[in-house]
Length: 195
Image (cartoon, rainbow, N blue to C red; front, side, top):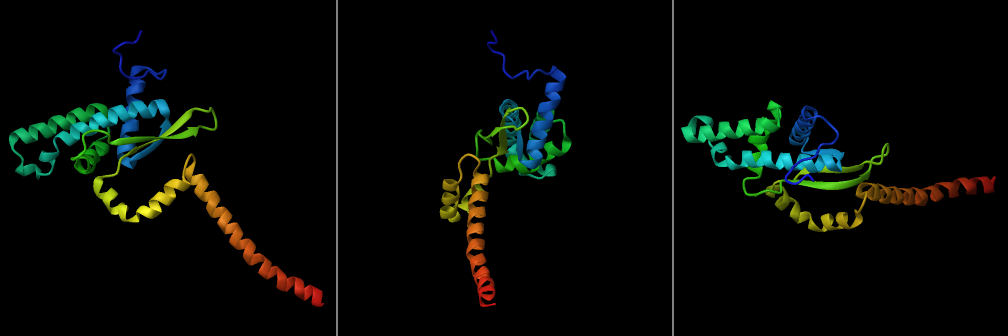
């Protein structure tokens, strides 16, 4: 029984597993969206949310300039950076975490990521997911005036929403072309009939 044993093995050695998840979390922080298998996405989410929480907890100190921080605040920031570096070994990703992502989530207590199921991978039928960071509250309020368009887009989308949109656009485009083509063909057929 695996009681009280958090995490997944994924048939890898511990060093390989740590490197894998470190790279996945760094990629998530850089691009804010990654495509991976379900099992890797769920474990990466656990580590990414913990790391973002370390950065968010020192958000009040991060808003101040480094030379304006007290000794206690500087110590808290250094400690949080070191804790984040335990999970993410990429300096650039940690810098982005503390400079951009932590201030974004100051008002949010957990739930910084979202997993969207994508279906199966073509080669081996592995279940795939999209792991993405939740946009900040300012972006949501800016997109709310477009509410009607957003609702229509959501209704049109389901599984494979992008494919549904592309097909709908393709059908609309084909219908427009078909309507335009007969007009072109009619003069051509008339000219043949007239000859």
